Length: 102
Image (cartoon, rainbow, N blue to C red):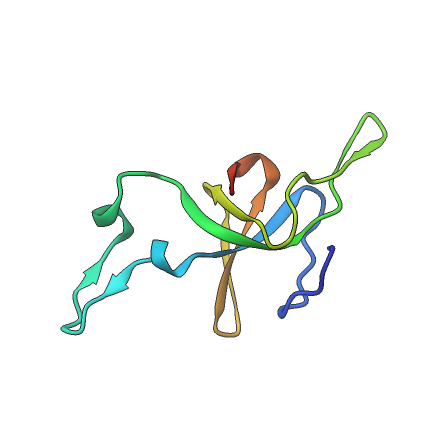
């Protein structure tokens, strides 16, 4: 982990901890109607900010470091959703990160 996160979670191996952007989550209208993400866009991926990274994966006895850095915005798919306190995070393998958003 290159920087401390508020959650004190340190992803293992090639996993990355991401917090999803608020504008890509489901929204709720003032009358209580839930508008899913799929109503806004037709994509299976999510956008988020990297908050912690693991050290990397071992390949033939060598450590291959994770290529994304804390603070970068990324486009990702899949991942395990975890809730720590009030904040929700995704833990994803580096291979599930589709792109870095510049």
